[in-house]
Image (cartoon, rainbow, N blue to C red; front, side, top):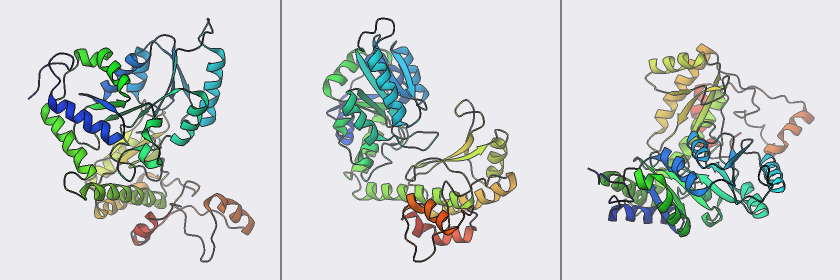
Amino acid sequence: VTSASPRGDAGTTDLALEVEREVASFVGKPDAMVFSMGYVTNASSFPALASKGCLIISDELNHASIRIGARLSNAVIQSFKHNDMYDLERVLRENISQGQPRTHRPWKKILVVVEGLYSMEGTMCDLPGILALKKKYKFYLFVDEAHSIGALGPRGRGVCDYFGIDPSEVDILMGTLTKSFGANGGYIAAEKHIIDKLRSTNASTQYGESPAPCVLMQILASLKLITGELCPGQGEERLQRIAFNSRYLRLGLKRLGYIVYGHDDSPIIPVMLYNPGKMPAYSREMLKRKISVVVVGYPATPLISSRARFCVSAAHNKDDLDRLLAACDEVADIIQLKFSTGVAGGLEPLPAGVDVAASEEKEWRRANGIPLTPPRWTMEDIVRYGVRDAKRPLR
């Protein structure tokens, strides 16, 4: 069942407007606009936000939809090294001082684009660092929360909630409704004048299909579940469960000897395979153990940085994660994936009575002649100590 019309014609319903109000309230913005496809949310919004004479500065690992949208806008595009605030400041200083190519006139607009949680790396953007630069250089900030909204922060509001930052400090918040909300589509949330501009100039408003009523109801129910309006307490419980699951599985994989990328609290857990030839072998071996995994290679990642990506949800329980860890232990021995030296985590606890900060542990080991021991924990020890250690800062 659908309205069979774009939003700009006859596709705007009372339900769509209610969802937009709920989304805006949820992310802490005055207004929001809902789209019927997540990819199009980015691809069609950048041409409406930037144009010739503008500068878009994008993280080098941003999603393809951001890259496509930026190219369609006819703005000049620059990239900076992933999550590197020094490189971002270098790019800002160079471009502000030089201005537009050939004419050297000031830029009409500078838009910095980052993702809240990166889908292939499991890393979070350094939002406090970006906002410090924003206060200094006065650019506009666009944050793509496709993977972080509904999964990060004590209230599930994404990276702003996680870092305790007022959403008003971020100019534009984008997110998809396919991950945490179990529906489809995406949204843009911002000040009312920005959303009004998008509604009048965005191509998907004029040509794109309006979201179906059943999808809008699913979005509405999911929002109310997370906020506690529907089934009070269940949303909070699910957020706590996904936070525990993420930390428990990440710590277990590190202790097995895997090299694991990403932030400790990230529900996206990339496990490094490196050799592209190991991707099909890893997938088949896991499938033999009744576990389906996503393997990712070129061009989504660099050629020799192939990986398997685990995405944790609140629906998983500890037994599921223990079964996954046991299968990962077996498969890692078969195709030789235990590369970790301990630098990236999974280390044994420090001796009793030793209280050394993580930043000082390297110096303490050097002073006492205690080398790093590559983590190769047994499954019994991982299960025995995992719950306790997942609630502490991960080693």
